[in-house]
Length: 488
Image (cartoon, rainbow, N blue to C red; front, side, top):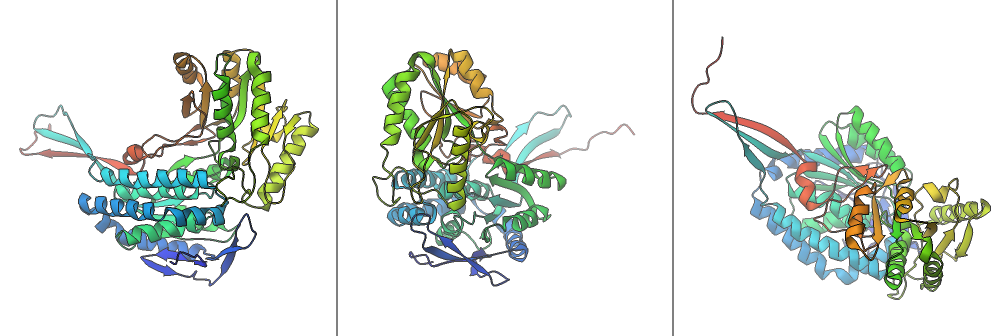
């Protein structure tokens, strides 16, 4: 594909192809409102074709030499590294991603590919002692087959890369369904990159779809008996539906879902650092990541000073064109997201919350918004709200902070800012979250880490170091050189 993206098509069996139905849709630039690209609007026929291509490619890829896989991933890392400036521009145009978060995504993905190269040589089994004399027992890890990967738009490069690279590195083939909001950087780009690096045809296939039409492709992928594992990152509502469908087909699903993440600021925190961390954690990528701090829970002893500093910093964050390196708050992804943010903030204020800054959209952007006193009945208080909106809550002790943090159906990630890191570790053990960062805010990720949540935030763990467990099956093997005696 050309560097100037005008059309995004499916990638099936190594070939760029239009939808069987011939339909397309226009993906819009969230900042300018202009057309980013014309995109293939696929359906069940395209999904079946992609699964067929992946199934055909599986046996050869699974049996391939580790050195071949390693070279492909190292080459892909170098190609991606060389395309940084182009990818910054495309991430801005397709998803409204600013330069800072684009660089975070690019760094992650280059490291992801380099680490995947090493995964090709990771041990794939173990010898297990047996009480049967003369029996040698082994547990071997084998790729599962075809993986259906469903990725979101908000960190499109990272979350699509994470969905496909590790499963491919351990010998699977993949069908990727990107979001309609990121069909290129969250979909077709990965097929383009890995094909250029030498990935054989059919190992990675991409099927795109029009807005509102994800369901038929997802359902087709999950129901196909050749698909053996589901990888999904997205909302809890959708994840629950997919998990139910996967369960009916007895298929394991690795789910990374929503977050309503707390940042605990304790009385002994360094205020300057706490404000810096909170501003970043709440507003990076315009608050449009599952890891962003949605609730800042502050000890009453420092809450007045913390809140004054935090609100002043939030109100001053530069807002506008995501391609401008100075911009911190860019556009939200679409008009629906903008209206949802407006409605939820208005509802919270109507129910008694105090609006400390922001709250009124400006063009395609929603300004950094801070509220206090949000009642538990407001949607902001209990549901994930994607955007630059954060709540401040006062508590009287660290114990109360933990209790309030745990009073959520979600459990993805959390941060604790304290002058006593060991105390922070003790509190972390009590927090109901899959990830806790002491003296840091919640937005952190590295390719090798066990990324995932508890409760309504998902099941299973992403991460290069954990791919062998999530995307392979253990096979028990025994071998004997002499006959075994039998009792009858």
